[in-house]
Length: 179
Ligand SMILES: O=P(O)(O)OC[C@H]1O[C@H](OP(=O)(O)OP(=O)(O)O)[C@H](O)[C@@H]1O
Ligand code: HPA
Ligand SMILES: [Mg+2]
Image (cartoon, rainbow, N blue to C red; front, side, top):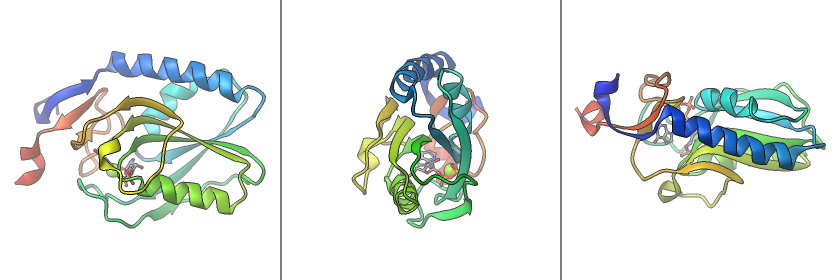
């Protein structure tokens, strides 16, 4: 897989350090809030596992699976709800964990959904923030890295469902997806 990567942006070590840093902040901010942590599948799986281990708070964990890229490099513009959470979130403090915020469409969809179910507070933690990709004005409260406007893979992020298991985040060689 390494041969398909143009350059590494964030190494295994960089990501571990970011997870530690964010975990400290989250521990501080979510003390006594007993949050429901909602991990956004599939991309956020690796980051979720690493960041929640750095959070010393009583927290419940749930998963939602939404999809809009369907393996490609462009958002389809439509968010499919593949699997919903099982928790009752009314009146609860929510922490969404994402791998990347790009156009902002997925996050807007999630925030609207959780608000419609009367969540008390919704905060967002993302490993990567691709601000230049934004089409909808949404913001994360906790950000690992600001990422350049290129298609990235690894550490949960896929192209055609592959590369999620790379231990780092890198830019995919355009030749991989342009021929
Ligand atoms: O800000 P946006 O432009 O909406 O992009 C961000 C979303 O897109 C990706 O999900 P994807 O639809 O690829 O599903 P996946 O996590 O299963 O790969 C990623 O994991 C985020 O959830
Ligand atoms: O740059 C990206 N890579 C992989 N998946 C994504 N989903 C949104 N942006 C990206
Ligand atoms: Mg994807």
